[in-house]
Image (cartoon, rainbow, N blue to C red; front, side):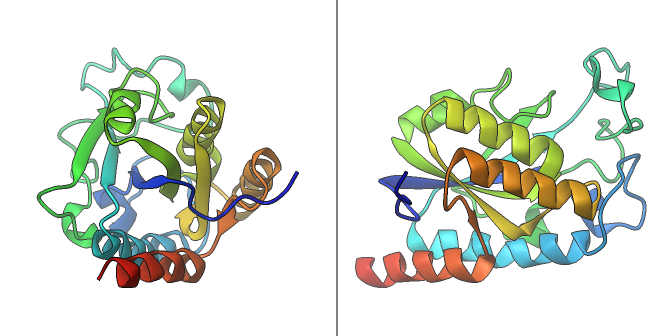
Length: 204
């Protein structure tokens, strides 16, 4: 099939689970690949570019109750207890990511940002067609959100050097899986910022 344009129609930037723990030594029970923090720091440039282009930004936070009633099967695999309310690493990294007052914020209890949240209602209100994904983990929350976006007929783009996986192998495998679903979906920060910069200049 032909490669689609980088952005089709209205775009929304979805910042997935970039929380305080990304900038702390203790990652609160979640394994991460080498270079994870650097990728999260690079993601700030994409947030700034989206703001400059007038692209809506939606921050997603995974958070769980202290009585652990809402973890479901999340602790059956490799991950230990994570993203628990009241823990220092759980709050969103709003300051580090340059959140602005007009940005949106949604919390979730499962890996996909669509599952049991108001994301779909918000995206319909924004008349979104293209989702730009940054954050973590590439092989978990980013991948599952991408797959749900794909199945809901959104054009999905993932910024490879602004996401991070549980391991480098898992990160790379998930990027390949997302590219399989939508050819041209995997981009770099430089590519998406150039695209957003062009939109910002066109609107000026």
